[in-house]
Length: 366
Image (cartoon, rainbow, N blue to C red; front, side, top):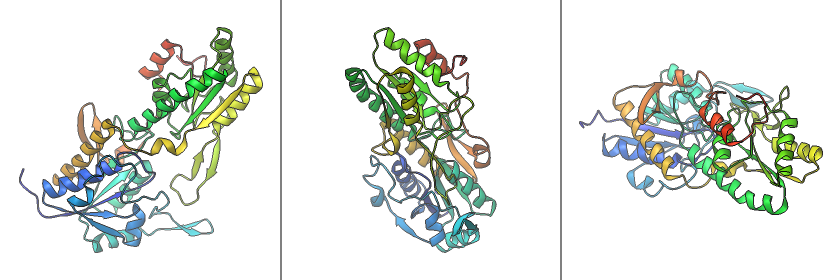
C-alpha cells in the first residue's frame, strides 16, 4: 500500500481503564509507523494531557511487549472534560480552545481518542471545533451503540464467570445465598452474559426492574427442592420495580458524576429478612476492569487500532471504528453517541436463559 503524506498521530486513552487499551495503542503506533511511515505521540492521562500539553513520543520499541498488559501505559482521567473543567465551588470552565492550541503545539495532525461514551462525546465536541480525529470504542459495559461489542467486555465477563464459579463452592458448602454485584452502569450486558456463563440462578439487570418478592420466592422454591443455595447476579444499576438505583457516591467534575453501587447489599439483606436463609453479597468492582485481556479482546483491540489508522489514511475524520458482524467498519461518532445500547427485552439471551430456568425477578419478562 502506498504511503500517505507524513503525519503525526496523537493517541490518548480517556475514561476508566480497561483490558485491551495497550493492545490498541500498540496497533496504532506500529501500523502508523510500519504501514504508513507516520509519527506517533502518546497524550498523557487522557484529555488532561491535551489541557496541560503533556505528551511523549512513541516508537515501535515503546509499545513492544505491552499487548498482554492490562491498564494503559499512557494513563487516563475521567474528570478532565475540556468543555466542563472543574473550577472549584461547583463551577466549570471551557478550555477547549486551549486544547486545540496545545494539539497544534504538540504537532498533532490527527488525534485517536480511545474511550467510552464520555470520551466520544468530548471527541465529537472537539471535532466540531476543527480538530481532525477518529474514535476507538472502549468500555467493559458494552453500552456503546453502533458496534456489536467493545474490547474489554469479553475479559470482564470472563472475570465475572470465574468469580461465580469460585462462589458456587462456598455457597453450596454453607447453604447460602450469594449476591454478586457487577459493573455495567445503566446497561445489563455484564450481568447478563457473565451471569449466564457462570450459571447464575437469578440475574437482575437495569432493563428489567425486579420484584424482591419474586426473587425471594425463587430462592425459597430452590430451597424446598433441595437446592440449598442460590447465586444471584445483580448489575450495579439493577433496581426494584417502582424504585430507584442505589447510588454509592458522586464524583464532581466527572462527565458522569454518579457512581452506582450497593444494590447487592440491599438485596442480600432483603432476602435474609424474608426467607430466614443466610445471604452474603460480593461486589466485584474494579476487579472486572483489571488484569490481562483475553485473546479475543487482544485481537479485537488490535483490529480497532489498525482500523483507526486506515480511517485516517482515507481521511475519514469524525468516525469511530466499530465491529459489525465479522467486519471492522467506520461510523460517525455523532451517530455512535446518539443513544446508549442497553439489553432489549426481546434479546435472544434473555429467552435462552428463561428456557434454562434462570429467573430475572420479574414474572412478566417474556
